[in-house]
Image (cartoon, rainbow, N blue to C red; front, top):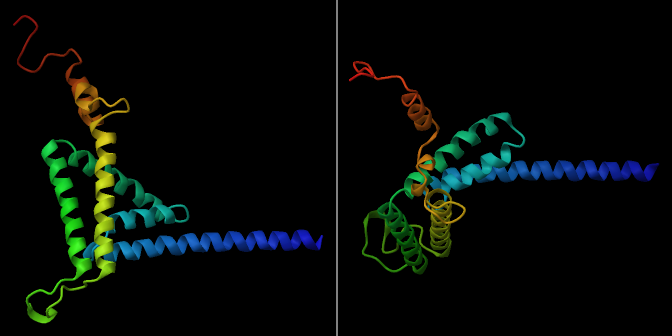
Length: 189
């Protein structure tokens, strides 16, 4: 009898530690994401991750995850719509990677205002976070290409005219094709 009470107590404590740990990780990701909006790092990605973790516990967080997720997918779809956009995204990711290597090395630069002869925030931590951000960006570009530009079977969405239309455009196209003539025209014209 005593043993089952101890076991229940340990399970309850383990559950409390798990929930508290997840909540702390969620809040930490949100705070770090806000900081990474102005510092090098994947700020929006960390904020969305924190909100997703907190959405399991808080209703306000779950209400905010879906609109952010929808906007992120819309931006990803827009980013891979044309090849010049894809190339600019890849170029941007490699530029961030290059700056990360430069910040890691921390070369001496001409003295500029209060910064002295070193790059501000130079060192391995800033360089590494910039390089990881560029790798995340490249992975997201590949994911967006696979999901939004090419279907499961590798063919382009442009081959399927219905796949290009979103729900609102599809409803509008179907309502225009309902067989009613436009104003000012008749069937006998």
